[in-house]
Image 1: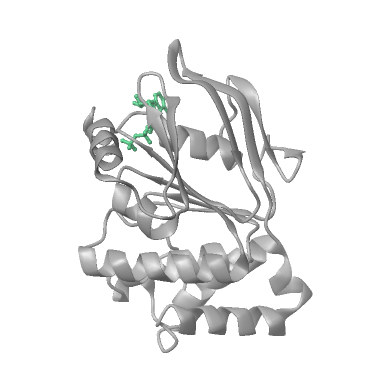
Image 2 (image 1 turned 180 degrees about the horizontal axis):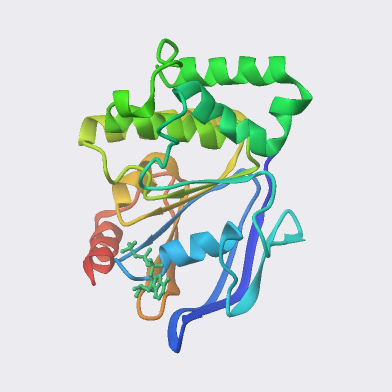
Amino acid sequence: MSLPVTIAGLSHRYGRRLVLDGIDLTVAAGERVALLGASGAGKSTLLQIVAGLAKPSDGVVTIGGRRVDAPLPGVTMMLQRPALLPWATVRQNVELGLRFSGLARRDPDLARMRVNTLLAQIGLGDRGDARPTELSGGQQQRVALARALAPKPDVLLLDEPFSALDMGTRAALRADVLRLATDAGTTLILVSHDLADAEALCTRAVLLSGHPGRVAEDLAIENGIDEATRGRVAARLDAA
Ligand SMILES: Nc1ncnc2c1ncn2[C@@H]1O[C@H](COP(=O)(O)OP(=O)(O)OP(=O)(O)O)[C@@H](O)[C@H]1O
């Protein structure tokens, strides 16, 4: 299942500093949207609020009609650094996603099968017993992706998940995310300051201008973008 995300009249302050101002944004069920903006535009703050990890100063976020004021089941987040448990195996790290969802307890056989399938899909079918430290950075990020996708989330939130990776690994992981998210019809919100990430994964790009972050442009990108738009977006992303 996939669910719509609605952000209405959202503003956020850290202390007295306004970092997000009057954000209105609706992401349809199954839609894949990139949130782009220069460093400090408030992208991560907005994603954390959508994840229920922070409360906005003003405004409301709903997912599937349900108001978000704490993390909701069915919503998973993947960060720039994989944050795997170093003492647990690759398999146990992926299973963790299912413990939170309750599937591991309800149906251990199905849970085991799902973990095996995911490990095979990310090319680590034979590394389930390895520790994260025995894997490369790209492989660790794949495990984090498998963990985020294991509970078959309705909404997947990605915060710069590719930025620590080299170009080859980045392209491969983007392809993994795209395949797994489209197969499941997952609603996806990707935070990035890289237009190429957005073009690889998303059908729509929302640009935040900075200080405070406001929606500056909302672009359909699924059929590519023209050079003038590309230049304008690049200039905005470079603006610190
Ligand atoms: N916990 C915090 N306390 C105070 N200020 C914060 C906190 N987190 C972020 N900020 C500030 O809020 C603003 C927005 O930060 P945020 O991390 O959301 O931006 P971003 O667009 O994700 O940036 P980047 O691309 O560099 O990660 C920045 O000016 C940042 O310094």
